[in-house]
Image (cartoon, rainbow, N blue to C red; front, side, top):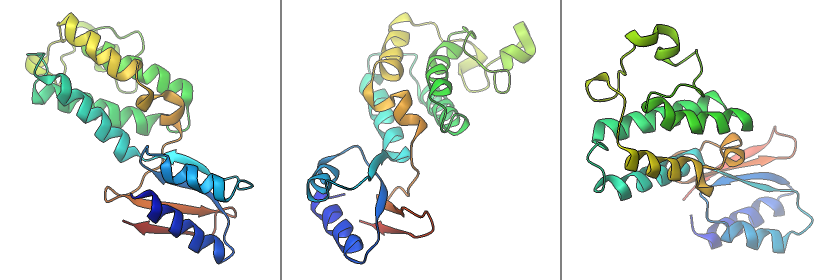
Length: 191
């Protein structure tokens, strides 16, 4: 969303006497930073949008795809499914996010130290387990791919566990959700 549009929208809402305490959007903070200068006394916070975080992960996966034969569409879909599930399962839980980010990569390589019995087939079935979303049901083996996946999920600010634990969920068309301090009044705006 354009920063100027965000600023104008918030100003219009605040002029109606509604206090804003949360703005959910993409990771561009330009508009939010402008708002904090206009309303320095405001307690509003900015949360990241789940769809934008996921899109950033997809971009990073596509950026390394040509370098890794094992990173097929099937493997990418498995990674994204695991990532989405992990976010949903650990909403509000920073420690759960930290553990889940480790498990995303390790699980696919046959290391189940950070897995949870509620979703990990290996912890339930042991050696009989076959991955349902990986080629031929087998663990990934490429150490170079593993290294690049670790950089995406463990060495990247856009997938920071604190940020992931407090993600907001807006529509993919860049809807901004505004919550009033009383949590009873809120509105949305689509750009």
